[in-house]
Image (cartoon, rainbow, N blue to C red; front, top):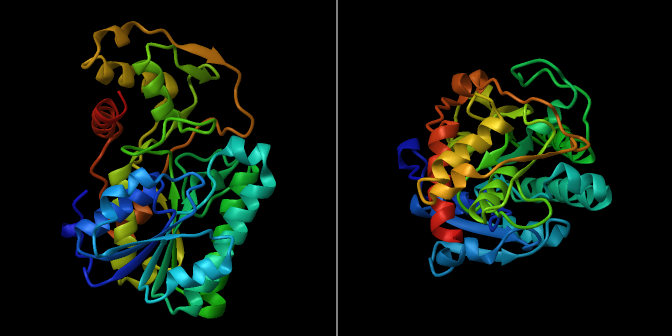
Length: 332
């Protein structure tokens, strides 16, 4: 994504934690294209060096292999940094249910380490990946930032605790923070492999292999699927905003429309069949609903529009077209 129209000062040195992951590597790439100095901190637990391989020879890019659970790694990465985009975390509701201790160590302990390191290095602003899972059992639709329910998974608890810690670090230490509640982000470089792969790349790979995608439930569960370039825009707008009302709060990061899983598979089959017509005939299978899954998710993006000037360019259809093209070219 070209972010030059968002007026981000190219002199800023920006740290991206989890910078070899899906969202982090896309942020690193956009920032480097903008002329920024970028430091990437990653331990490659879920990220991949191949995502940033093309950046390693760039003089403005520095890779620091380290773990946010180690406070010294965090402090080292924050030296001379103007802004932090904190993406490092262990995602996935099922992963957190299977191993709540590690999810808490990374997502809460690691987050706290990064806040301390950012404070100690006088970072101008700490922008972090929050999560729509924070809405928990709240049945209100669309989701509005100041109305949340009780968390439905250990992962959701960790992401809510992040918001509480960020708020305290602003009030007690004066660290500027902005949290971005991501809603089902998808796009290029998203890993289709592994037990906890996100639904879109997993379905794409399954269909490309002429296998039946398996939907948990009857396919009527819906999500606000959000293309990666919309997420990049939100991160950059969170850095450049000089509106005092826009800082020290959280924002939904989404497109503002919902798509159910049956509709999602139909769109994927449509776009993939442009490359392989046989994919259009593949049937879907259905399985049990996963523990911790929220039935429906739809974001209100009015707060981000009003305070940050957010104007997402990619609908689910436009994003899926680009994502499918990328997957076909890179993974076939």
